[in-house]
Length: 166
Image (cartoon, rainbow, N blue to C red):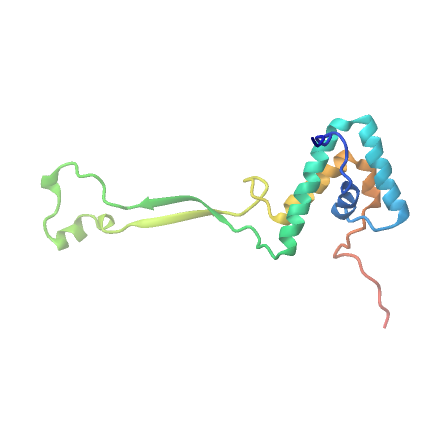
């Protein structure tokens, strides 16, 4: 009989998963900081560990999908409406009998307009892009392990660069 794993304890692979998820460089000091933060959370608030593990698993799945070349989220249809289709007949004696009379009577009886509304994938409608989902899980993880934010590698911004003199 195998013992069931404790949901309030870290798995052996979680340290490396945290390092990859937060893009922390591999140094002995950073690995020690991650280990200390994990031990601190396990002592002080073990109820948060299952949520952190779920975020790590979700980040791993997203990274796996992004590495496999998964496509961006497509816009989706929110509503299709049809206008101008034939309406129910109220009095059959008032309807036109010839084609020319139909054109004079109501051309919209012959036309059907279809309009389709699309919605872009955003946080508001619940269909985030994989990059946005990953960032959301990383932020959730940093809420549980806040001291690791300072160990993250700095992301370059488009406003940074080196001055070149000519």
